[in-house]
Amino acid sequence: MTATLQFQAGPAPAVGTARRGRTSTVASLMRRPSFVVAAGFLVFLVVVAALAPLIAPHDPSAQVLEDRLKGPSWSHLLGTDDLGRDVLSRLVYAARLALLAPLISVSVAILLGVPAGLWAGLRRGWVDAVTGRLSDTLLSLPGLAFALAVVAVLGPGLFNAMVAMGIVFAPSLYRVVRGATLAVAEESYIESARAIGCSTRRIIWVHVLPNIAAPFLVQVTILMGVALLAEASLSFLGLGVQPPDSSWGSMLEVAYQNQYDAPLAVLPAGTALVLTVLSFNTVGDAIRDTVARRRDS
Amino acid sequence: MTQATDPVLSVRGLTIDLVGPTRQRGLVEDVTFDVPQGRSVALIGESGCGKTLTAMSILRLLPPELRVTAGEIRFAGTDMVSASGRTLRGIRGGPVGMVFQDPMSSLNPTMTVGDQIAEARRLHLGESRGQARAKARELLDRVGIANAARRVDVYPFEMSGGMQQRVMIAAAIACEPRLVIADEPTTALDVTIQAEILELLRSLQEQMGLAVLLVTHDLGVVADFCDDVVVMYAGHVVERAPVEPLFARPRHPYTLALLDSVPQAGRARTMLDVIPGRVPPAGAFPTGCRFQPRCRFAVEQVCAAPQPEFEPEPGHRCRCVRVGTHELSLEKVS
Image (cartoon, rainbow over all chains, first blue to last red; front, side):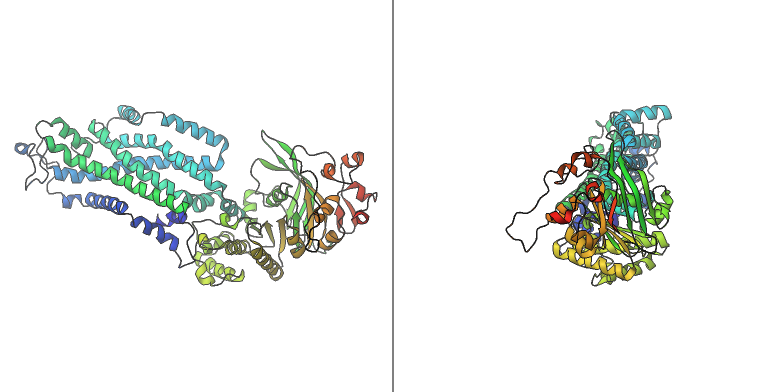
């Protein structure tokens, strides 16, 4: 990933040590406090998700009905929900879904959008026209409504819902990839690659993809945040994750149902959701700004 | 021009048309020339005369809307016009190297220069990354880049334009080609660097026995560097000859006018000769001689007829009926 990011490294002041371009993009990202904090939070989330059984103080599904809707205490740091389950444990386990769900839909979007974008950008003509109209059609569908329709047909479940969101996200990735590919295909290094006998496949992997990596990465990180929100929305409506599994969205729903008995219960899941989406967006913005600034210089 | 061996590259009657909704015929028409082994041939002409199209068509690198509709391009016995994709990929970067005009945009910004030079060897000779990189170091050294061992790991943006063009040349000669096609290799560089790059090309040519096809509009470059000259005007070859007779005794009115319009150091404060009018756009080419509307020697009936190629002297050919039939002698007028 870092290797593919270095293209935006503008003219450096002098010829220096090798790999300067590679380190300098990462280095200038690391100089942004917002990026460090946001990326740090995402790394923390990955660790929490991976080590959930070790971190969670209780079984997330264990119900203790006499302890329903309790506030924070030493045995339940974030209190309990309407079935007496430990909120902290559920929050920790839900971190897995918070990462997995966006990963599913963004993967689907990549699988559909990137090949189509590359194809359209390189071949243009009728390929571009057909894929372009197709993406316009998808863009005109309201995302959540489309996901609801898919869930209605295939039955509720996180996987179905996230695949549906991935299809909805594909056009935005398609547009970014197509645009970047169009620009790169005009560069004469693509022509020189052809002139030394590269096959089309090699041109795509070696000469096009690394050069469109930056806008692609920006779009992917932003989509991760949007996908997480979509997952939370669907789970909130009861169409995403199914009990007894927990998602931040379904936890919000529980808190919403009991808002008169435990008004603060929305805070843990809500905060986790806000911080995670914010982190994805901040990382995306930081990459975009770094790229833009170094292109201008 | 007469050589015992067959030419490395031979182009016969090449015609390139623009197909599709905006079709135009004869952007390049009936172009014939040879590039013999070990010689350098210049393809000269104004912008838009079809010299780059001709050069690109040799490796079949034309965009899809431009098509070779007639003629033959033979490289070392291979018919390039009908060659398969696989055959073409084997020739591109292998026995034929290509250098483009703008080195800055001709190098992939995400690859080290070493990897880019090595790419051709890995593709064509199946070398490992390590072997090819070692060779890339050698090649960088050979094209005159100091400190080659460190420069292989550098990215293109860390180099100057002149150095980048040296890298492009190193990549073009990586597989020891027989022919290098250089499309205005010095146009984007400043004058002092231009001379260095040409000197480099010349020395490589001598060491490796390369044939070079140099596309240029710079007559000074041609006079310094080339053995033979092919002059193009509006898609036609109007004259071809070895460099000395061409400069001393041009046989086509266009070549004569072109030579007259070069500023000369010894003739300060005189009016510079110019060619009146402008090159007709493709699609508005006159029939017969395409230079005739701007030619001071044009005679309507004679020049509107198709112009065959004449050979007034051995090896010196021109496409002007009046000169070819000895009706007109350019030596008296100049």
